[in-house]
View (tube, rainbow over the protein chains, first blue to last red):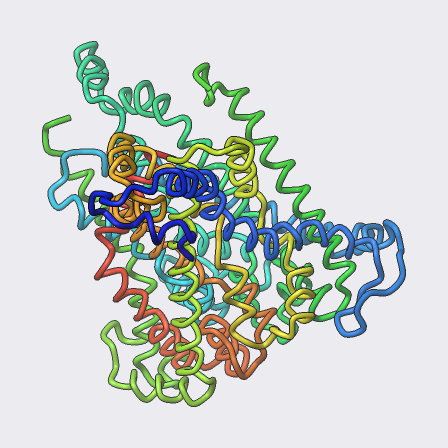
Length: 325
Length: 272
């Protein structure tokens, strides 16, 4: 934050006794014109270096042979993309990623909206409630994965003990493909539901209270008010939460990686819960093939874009977006 | 909606909060019993007296204090930088007129939607070229600015600073930087606090990038936890004691600043 040179002389707040208008005025108008650019420059310079440049460079790396240690090799065109697409784990880990994402974001959004509706009432100790539901958010995904890894232990985990207590067979949470997806989705939900509930709550508090009053006068109960007044009024926030949880959910990495107890840490013995981001890590930093890692990253990006578009389409289709946007 | 909610509402909320707290208690519980008890599965429901023994073993297994120090350093530096640079840029976008402002702002917003993981490979190459891999520079520099931060501060400053006040300051002969420092910066303080907390937590909890960019012996706390688990994955009393110990700093931060964080989320979402 370096002050512009003009800042120093003009900074005198005392009335000007010896007038030097032309020089001063020119300096001051220079100050007005350049200051905005000076203020935004650090962002654009740094962002160009660590944000934009890597983005563009990924495309360059993805069409080359590129080893982690040896650096750039020869141009190979789309070969890396072909390799990734024909890799048997790509399809499997893509399905895993989508499955974990759906199991996490759908219940998460539904529960968060209901929770927000509960909080949007005249509660005693409002701030305490709000803070308590945000509690899991401060626990890092790594810690969450370790904690839930023990809760969902195949032999002695608490969850299986509870299941046994009500006469059910233990579930092999780390072995069975679908069960492992449920366990990982549970971690994601545990961490993010309260956070999303607060975002929804903020939107709900902006809904004019007289809308509820007139709905009540028309004989609408609480559930009816929620469906006909609250939900339509929080549409933009709904879009925001769905899009951000899509971007986050499709990149899940720490949870499945730390849930894995095998030594390879690739997402289970048969990669039954490996994700696309784990595949990027595997290609790049275990197989030391940065070209294929970049190609995988690009495909993940395209998948995220596709899901974002699908989200928008579905939201419009079911009228969640309504007319006002 | 002025009437008090019924028992059902409180019951559901209590159930949810218990569900939120239970896994944390569970990790502390297993971390406070001996390895043998923890390996048996469900321990007694009250904590045992072995937490510090287990924590000490965890600290001896991985470079725990160094990792904690690294995380504190990286998170504080990046959070401070994001706040300062975002406030400056956000102020320019919200309150100053300049050529290209609209297009540049659209650019900032567009980049918010691009997932960071798309760029990890080139970022890694870049850091190697600069000779920064393995050092704290590698985990600090990529986080010094965020598009989210700029957008967040812009949204806040649009309403928080009346244009008349800025005009008046300028009429009095204030230079641009003085106007920023004495008028805009104080007004931005509540939003800056939220942004600081958010960035701090985001960097503190990040795992993917430090795992790639840092060596085994100089990790952040998240990577150290990962090492803890990979070495002794069956020893849950050790791993969970370490996890609890690593979670405590953020819990303290949350208790101290949680009220502000909560109100900040509320504010950001309304405006966003």
